[in-house]
Image (tube, rainbow, N blue to C red; front, side, top):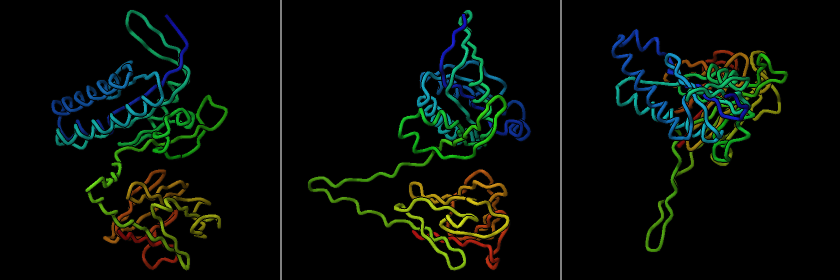
Length: 302
């Protein structure tokens, strides 16, 4: 029997599975990857989904609702992280999903799905790195409000078979909610912790990122909070965001963003994000040092 319906299609696969086999040997690697696939399958069913098939170290599954697919994806990441701790190996998975029309084929209890939505979901999984969950802008619009708040735009790109560019979003996870303890009758309220502040400066420009001002942009255009007139910089090159007490640089550029920490570590970020701690320097599209005229300085004060 074939029917046309709307479903969330998801692909979840183990990142770096080849390296697991090389490092641990076939027997141990097979044990770890099998446990991981079990966790992905169990989590799918817990959120009302259905495992369609497993392909090597990848699970393909469907969910009737976009929000349940998103919650399932987050739980998958958390469960696999815990499994890795239990097994003593840093397991990571890539997850991509999309909600749309599919052809669902049911024959003797075996279910399969076909169509453009399946291809798009696979494309989202291919865009993801270990620990990431990727989805489309179209799917984000269908998510519950609390889930939408935990998404961030990555890039708009052309996809074969689509006349319009597809917007790709990341669904973030693993950031603990801060708890506010309210003082009741006869109970003293827990005093509020001092607000963290990240000061970002370039030449004679300086701005702060705080809980009250949670995002700034950096780039060549003078509409940015910090204008950096470098030929290597994109018009809007990167953002710095405050999320639940932590600060992240989010690259949105062609040439990438370079970080140099106070310990001298050099980090390249491209279409990705990196948490900022302590102090250091940022280069838009090029490496910079403390004395470089194109260096952007950041300092975190708790």
